[in-house]
Image (cartoon, rainbow, N blue to C red; front, side, top):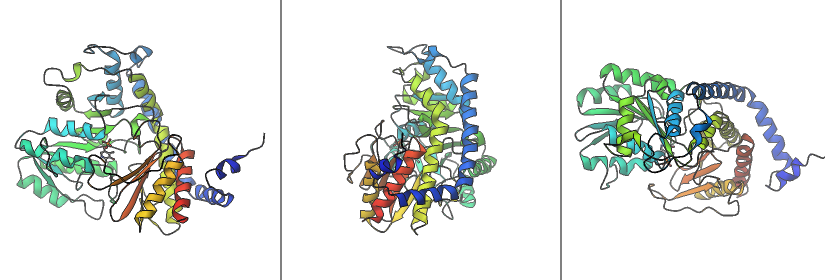
Amino acid sequence: MENNLGNLYKNFGISEKDLTRAKKIETDLKETFDKLDEIKLYNQMKVLNAMQKAKLSDIHFGTSSGYGYNDIGRDKVEEVFANVFNTEDALVRPSIVNGTHALSICLNSQLMPGDTMLAITGKPYDTLDEVIGIIDAPLSLSQYGIKYKQVDLINNGDFDFENIKKNIIQDSSIKMIYIQRSKGYSTRKSLEVNQIGEVIKFVKEIKKDLIVMVDNCYGEFLTYGEPTDVGADIMAGSLIKNPGGGISITGGYIVGKKDLVERASQKLTCASIGKECGLTFGTNRANMQGLFLAPTVVNGALKGAIFLAKLFEEDGYKVFPASSDERSDIIQAVSFETKEEIIAFCKAIQLASPVDSFVVPEPWDMPGYDDEVIMAAGCFVQGSSIELSADAPIRKPYTVYFQGGLTYEHSKLGAMMAYNFVKDL
Ligand SMILES: *Cc1c(COP(=O)(O)O)cnc(C)c1O
């Protein structure tokens, strides 16, 4: 049979010239991609070891009913997560509805009235505004008398050690140090695990009983370790991002010190129940299979993000991070001059999708976000941003955030189409 690849690409508006350029970019990126493959290998071995150590077995993929007492699958999944993240315990549940919920549970379970949370990576992800009380909400932490303080990053990505220290020394009510690893909807650098390790050591030397919490969304399997390997006490993320490998259909995880995870579980369920109840609705197998595939899926998504960075960067567009930068999450930001460019970008991503490729994304008022947001996501799992997706708040600077792709090939297609759509405006 003939190789008709060129024709298949033509259906997506990709020309021979585009393909030649893509080849050249891949050649230029070879060294970077080789390094990422080393990281993938490391994480694949780590996950496999974690599963074998926990003696994961076919019997753990069943389901229970009612209270879910003695749900051995649920306990096993949590043991595997604790092994992967090198923590004493884990809470991995389909009843954690998303990343925001996982983070909210951590905050609400560790902080008590009179305590202060100190965010040291600037303002947290938008959906936490109401959780914290940065925007008024009846059940915000602030309504319970929990205070919030913030130290911004300096130089767009370094910790402001001096101000962090000043705050901890001057305010004895500070109980928690909050770190967001990924940039989220901002154009700062994402924090590297080593950097997080340094600041944790620094704050613990000032006051050793501070609880350090990390929002690890989008950061899993990016490098040779996770924030919990360098001293984070409690950490949370979403299963429909990196650690679900595109296979998990819902859920979030919380990992960390045993007593902290126990408190989190009592917030998720209630004081008398904690981790002991709660069905997993048959999600255990998918969560384990997803976790097993996650290092490979993250690797593909990351290569796609770097490919896209290079494609736009060579043409003089502002991209964060640059194609040659170290990465600590899978998000690729590109800034444009106009709203039309981000909309064209998102339309291209939607057209490249395996699901709902025939619908046209439009900006809308999404729950939890302050500005209108446009989202392109033709995903097998709704809203799954480990799958090829792009989103942008409609505000200046017009920055679009591109992420995911269950395979590198798909992520690359999305990148090429987005580029062509923006250029054809
Ligand atoms: C995705 C994300 C979250 C949580 O978002 P959900 O959509 O609720 O899962 C929180 N923080 C960061 C940095 C994120 O990227």
